[in-house]
Amino acid sequence: MLYALCYINNRFLPFNEAKLHISDLGLQRGYGIFDYFLEMDGKVPFLEDYLDRFYRSGVLTGLDVPLEREMLKEKILWLLGQNGFRNSGIKLVLTGGYSEDLYTPPSDPNFMILNLPVTHPPGEFGEGVKLILLDYVRYMPEVKTTFYFPSIALFPRMKAAGAIEVLYHHSGLISETTRANIFLVKEGRLVTPSPGVLRGITRMHVLNVAKQLLPVEEREVRLEELWECDEVFITGTSKHLIPVVEIEGRQIGDGKPGEWTKVISGKFEDFYMQVISETPAGFSG
Amino acid sequence: MLYALCYINNRFLPFNEAKLHISDLGLQRGYGIFDYFLEMDGKVPFLEDYLDRFYRSGVLTGLDVPLEREMLKEKILWLLGQNGFRNSGIKLVLTGGYSEDLYTPPSDPNFMILNLPVTHPPGEFGEGVKLILLDYVRYMPEVKTTFYFPSIALFPRMKAAGAIEVLYHHSGLISETTRANIFLVKEGRLVTPSPGVLRGITRMHVLNVAKQLLPVEEREVRLEELWECDEVFITGTSKHLIPVVEIEGRQIGDGKPGEWTKVISGKFEDFYMQVISETPAGFSG
Image 1 (cartoon, one colour):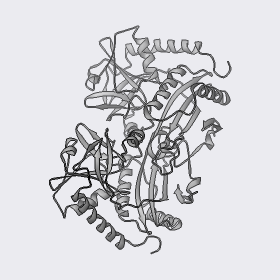
Image 2 (cartoon, one colour):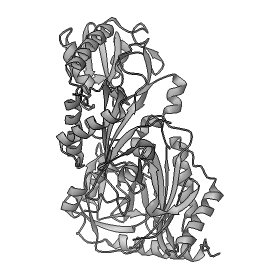
Image 3 (cartoon, one colour):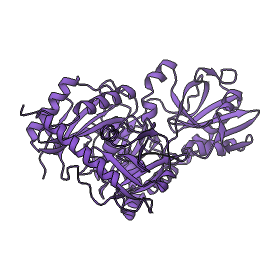
């Protein structure tokens, strides 16, 4: 069985023994936020970006991160050093805490740092993936809340379709997938939905890289544009950039990973490796 | 400290010691449903209605209740007998279970039955309460999911307004409050929103009682109707029927509990006491 150390409420303990009392409001009332990022050889690329977003999620939802930023970084890096996975994911989870009446938020939240190995590091481009559609609007889309109910309840339909993610749309507009942002290429222009989406860290850096290659539009994107465009790809922390070749049973473009997608992916991987090389190793430095 | 027995995954144990591993999908991904009902002197009025709804929530969301109905009833009644509170709440919570990757639902869910004392039994009519407004649509409104994030994040604004619940509205239509259904009385007609609301058990029985007293309409209700109506009240398991005298700082009707509200409340309490008297005591019978 996997051995990993984790951190809960000021205490380091083995992941397998990590429990919360059932009065936790994250469990009872879905009152929780999180963030997630990767370690590679002791380095955490874009750590400051992820921490920016996590603290911002807290401010927007009334959940106070109980650790100051420098202290939080210290705990994360110490944990990475102890576990020594070299390829792992770090998940920060902050919930409303233990509530006596299972409803009213107490003053003390529950906060945990989880660190588990990653078996498939990002950067593998592959032959393209499939998505399914769901009419759904995330509440506070700019916040990483723990509410993944709508897409997790669709696992059977996803499996049947051979899909890996659910693409949300509403009122004729698409927004994002379960765990990724979406991009379209049409006639040499890159388009991605905004506003109403999570500000993905990979999304942001892919946009920066792509801006040097082709015209980029952040705007409302209609569902129909999917059927008329040349290429679609999704971006995420665990995925980097993955081509999409089918959505809800309909072929995208010519059904193969697109040329622009390949070019942008290549440039992003170059950028990522450069960032890795410039990032000091947290726990050995 | 409170001593109460509870039930988790085929085991009875003290509530204070009841924990779940943090890989639970209810905690990590908000993948959970619940239901809640009251015990009074060992009796559980409308138990069959609540169980109908709970099993239906499971079917609609792909979460299998791991106990057959008769077995579940047995566990509930045994728990009530052991705790012997006489005035208590029973909460059934079913989550997606322990997930190795904190995302993919496993085959075994986590299921718990909580039983905690109630300090304010329902039926107290009072001077009327205040609500605040939130533009929000519940996902799968007919299902009792655990996602209360939007309203719990509003606790500070609720407190500042002296409000007890958040009333949801969207696209000009109202639906329900955090934990209650809403009714309006206008010129001797009773109106309540439908569809797009939780099928409250108290709502259902209040409708049945009210139908014998005045014309009743279940239909889409516009937000503006709140400002033009004579009376507003909310209904819920823990509240029965409570008059609403202010919403988002605006007075409802003449700012006092309405006459029809009083009449319907009185008839509902009569009906409730009759049901109690006809319900066999679960654990002593």
